[in-house]
Image 1 (tube, helix red, strand yellow):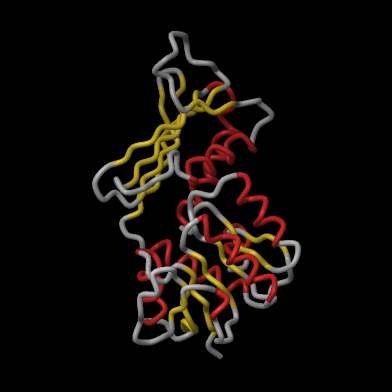
Image 2 (spheres, rainbow, N blue to C red):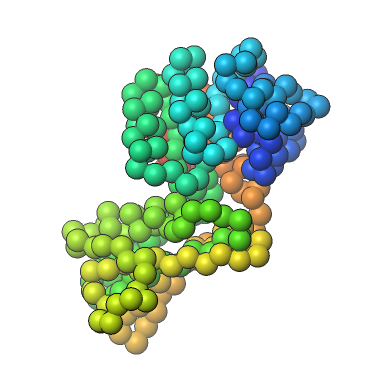
Length: 253
């Protein structure tokens, strides 16, 4: 039986990629879209607000804007619908909203919908546990010149993965230009590059005495994030309330 998806942010760049990917699949379909622009699709209706949606769906995929999160979660909770939150640029308040909604319905949230990036985070954790404090850790991320937030949520996810693997009290350093001092052994430098049409590049660098280990991931198209969000949506259908992430999806394979 086809799983029916309610696509929030359907008229955005990622929304269009998701719609295209779903169209090529046989296990799901878009029941309706929600987007403030109201841009139309030939194959499903589009509404400017969740209040106007009349179609039944099995799951929500949200790839819109952080400002739309409240409406997405309210609709999900009110209709007992699981929701995949794939929107980037979330802050601490948004995370709190997600966790609160997860107490009432199933919510899938990760800073990056690529399985490869989540594998990178796991490898970074393992490397940190082995290399310990003998290596300095730096994270570099690069994205297109239209990306608003910096550093990327994925860079923060990678930094959090590193700190979770050790008892060392690391702190994040985003800007060294005003400092005139040696690098603190307990800092993790996080650097952002913005330019051109870079889809997404992430590196975790472990710099030791006379050797450097670099773990990296390169996204070549937005389709990897679309496919990840669709797979997450299908995985989430029928799940109990709670917060789910890519580790749960990978473990289910």
